[in-house]
Length: 241
Image 1: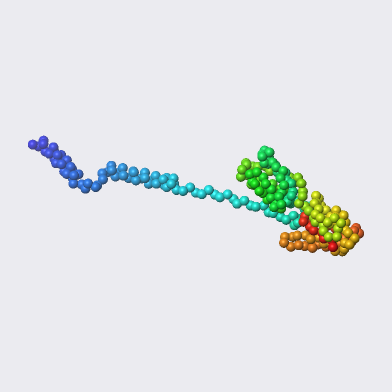
Image 2: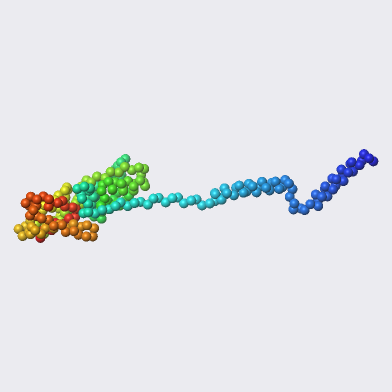
C-alpha cells in the first residue's frame, strides 16, 4: 500500500495538469506560437522599407542647363579694323574635324543673317565674330558628336558696304575689303561733280535706332590735313550735297 502512494500522487498531478490545459481559453497562444508570430512581424517590418523604396517613383532627371544664345551685334557699331563681324552675303568655310565631308561645308550667310549646316540646321551667323560662331557651333554639335572640333574661316567678305550718294560722278554701294577713309570712298566714286558743295558733306551712321550725322571737311583734307579724314564703317552713307 505504501509503495503505490507515489504512483497515485503522480497520476493525480498529471490529471490536474491535463484538466487545466483543457480549461485554458482556446484563443491563448502557446510560447512557440508567440515566438513564430514575433519573428514574422519583425521580418515584415524589415521588408516594408524595401518594398516602399522599390515602388516609390524615381526622382526626375535634372533638366539640362539652358543654352545661352550668342550676343548678336550690329556691324555699324563696331570698329571693323579691330574685330570683324560676319554679315549677310559673306561666304564661310565650316570644318568639323574628323567629320568631313559630311559636316564640312562652304556656306553663304543668307540675307536673314543665318547659315545652314547638317544636324544643327539654321544657325545665326551675322553679327558674330568667327570665334563667336565657332563656339556656338561647338555647343550645338556637342549634342550629336563627342567633343567636336570646329573651325570657321571667312572665305569671302561681302557685307562691308558703304553707300556714296549725291553730287558724285558714280554714286552707289561700294564693298570694302579693308580699312578705307571717307576720301578714299569719294575717290572710288570718281570724285565730286562740278556742282558739289564741298562744305556740305556728311556721313550718316546708324547707332541702334538713332542716326548720327558726322560732318566731313573736304577742303581741309584736300589741303593735306589728314586729321579730318577718318575711317568709314559698314553701313555708312556718305552724302554729298
